[in-house]
Image (cartoon, rainbow, N blue to C red; front, top):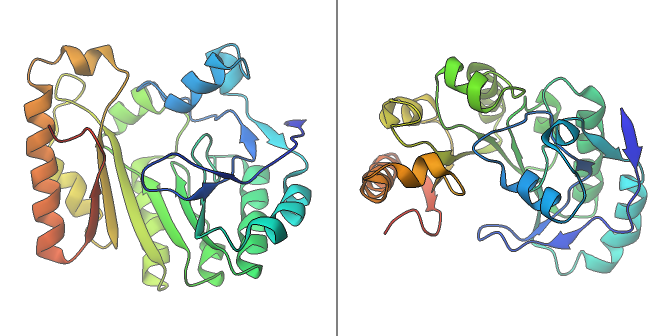
Length: 252
């Protein structure tokens, strides 16, 4: 495992459903090929040069020291901190990253700051011992392991992600799912209802289209497809009392 240092950690995010965020790892071993917005951005700004470099994560060694400095200055401005928008806090198979993420969440919670977590890895059971205000989520766009192996080659198997999320739900935690980037039928033929039913226990579902993809934009009815899917998600959530958010640009 390689290490880097940074000059700052917490920052205000421009993501539509986010507040503050932190990215305490550079790169992501999950190697998503949708394509990955985080990889495209880091490559554009010269922080990584290649996909192979991206999938070899580097830990920010001074993460906790930066939090100690920044939390007192920012805590009155922060509603919540998202882990993470440009990496994964519980990267599959990287215990050192998971341990650092848990320590960061504890430190933020001790200062009275709520954390929102999103992962394609395994949410650890220890999260249930932390603040009741926290929200824990997984990314899930399919149940087909062949598709996952093709598009999320280093990420956790779908069933393992769902199991860990349900374990936290049963422990009384707030749970959610990000169904983004949801694939068009030319990428995989599947039933959206099956994916929704697999996570019907959650408190919130966020649904969004695939962006930056030639395969999606070349699918002749992609706009109509996402309109129908968004309507299905809304109806599913309303029927079950689940909160939902449809990402900007998904419905047209």
